[in-house]
Image 1 (cartoon, rainbow, N blue to C red):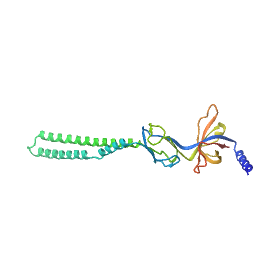
Image 2: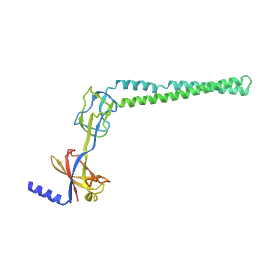
Image 3: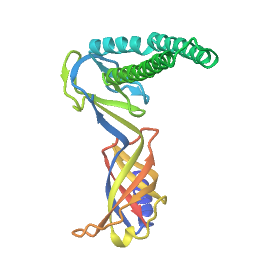
Length: 262
């Protein structure tokens, strides 16, 4: 039986003009951390857990940020100053219009009185505009506070498994310090370096055969996603990247393998 398998593999390899070694990796993999410094308050996942994009993985102590968000929210939602300023402006506007009509139809109102009413109206209108601007500023400050609060949470950037967690509860972290590694191994990539004469016959999107050394030999098909437009001057090799399905998780990313080229 073993001899039969070896013979069949030999015949399969003979159908190709050359094979080239490559290394596999998850197509989506990242070491992520907070953009701000702080102390870890809660870790919501464990190593090996599968998470979805948008899931909360970890958060920092956020008491101060929550208070600031609450305070700015109250200010942003309080419209009393705008309502009051508008009511005042409407009152002065009506008073001004009545005064103008009296000035035009009788001699009981002087021009100075009309000017005074117009001044009161214009000042109240400016106060209303200032109140609206202040309210916009309050809304922006609330949004800034919310944005700062959101920085206290570490969110999954894509679906995948938690590979490693390098920090514990109550430990301090620095901004941009990697604390969690996440990878989606369901789709993987093999990177190989192929001689120019063979790489020239390949095309992006072309299906190729792979042989992967994952405990035991695994045969898979993949599609070329990238062929380097330049050639390494020293080795005369071109970089070729092949994407293959690994939803069965038969291949552990990081293992080596071969790409068969006709």
